[in-house]
Length: 598
Image 1 (tube, rainbow, N blue to C red):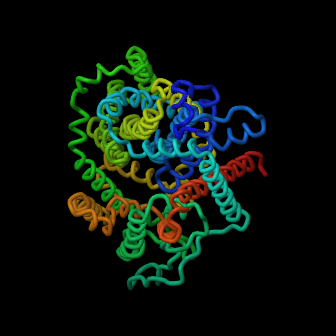
Image 2: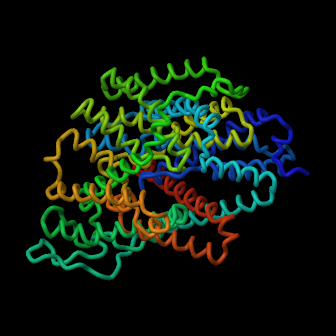
Image 3: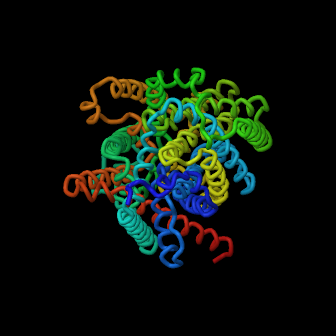
């Protein structure tokens, strides 16, 4: 038997475009969208769910096949399925975990479920159309590597060449989901909460309190497995950088700000996260924004290449699966009208700014796509900040345009970067881009319907619930801070934050320049400035959990390298999915209980 996957041997790559593939992707992606919304409101970002979706679809249809004696899902179908699932899961990047709640907190306004769903769909569909427009140049002509897409493609080939390996990974994924579910259920039933470390920091003479306990400063151990699993995925350097940043921010800077009277103390027996983050987010945001933009500037060659006219050879390439130019033109016109209408109708954004936001999405997505294609890092933070700064200059003091017009451009560009990885996977397996684009569009619809419902159930009161111990929402804090600077000016910031922001900005720029210019064997031991800045907006116990997860994964790689390479990511992804889904379910029960007075 050939080692080539079934669809490739048959020579019929279009055979993977089936109803069950599209529906499976939409359903799986909808569930995974809940995980990313949950995770994004906790730590500020979500996970790429392509491989998780591929394993899930393989396991589901293997079981259905065994029970019904029908055909299992072929590799081409799985590629179409995971493409749609990835689009649905990435719906959190369309604004649900950053600009939308930031807009609500600042203005006090909310969107109804139908309007929120329509808005998020419009942003997601712009991303799909942009990806469909630029994929030919970036993947077919320039042949950029898109490492994440390559990894998914290789995983799928391995799964279908050796089916027992796929089943083994799927079992580990399910075991991780069970562990994550048990972790969350234990926390719910036994009312588990972070346990403060046994020490205190003396306060300055004349301060309102005598000392600041570790619990006040969020220096604690969290019994949840969720953040440990996240740490296992994101790696040692980022996790240790966040631990370092958390200790500096909450163990040194916050006590100093409290002593100076710049930040307010809370109840003696409680965590002071909500009070502390109001001050710490400013230097943290300055560090993240300046670090991200400096890093982005180092990609100038990619940016210039992205903005050059398409290569002359592009038109000569015959691709039977390509999306017809006429279809792209009509789709582009449709999303332009759709998105502009929602911006004008919902947020009273000036028509010319609304149109500009969509047009700018194509430019920013081309840049983001090339950067992620070459480096495997989608510059989400930089995209968001560039667009916020752009619209802040074009329409100063207007919170809606700063947040929501930038939401279109930044959200579409970041989602496009993720979706291009799936198109790269499809190019490896022979899938037709026009079929993947349809699956992505269906995924956006399904993800918006379920993801928006999850957001409204999880966070019925963004102003009262976010930027708290339970929902740190660092991405919301970042978008909110930038919008407030443009709306109110620097004089409206808390006392002492302006010099702290300047220091954070300098650290962000200098640290990133050093990261980009020093040898790699030196950089691996240096803190990541963006990760350090992020820690200013997270509880220290979250950073501790990240570090524990990264250390455990590193130890496993040394003790059992083969097992870890095969199953480590699958187990962590399962824990994240299991705990997130149970957490969302718990929120749903609480919502219904409060509605019916139980």
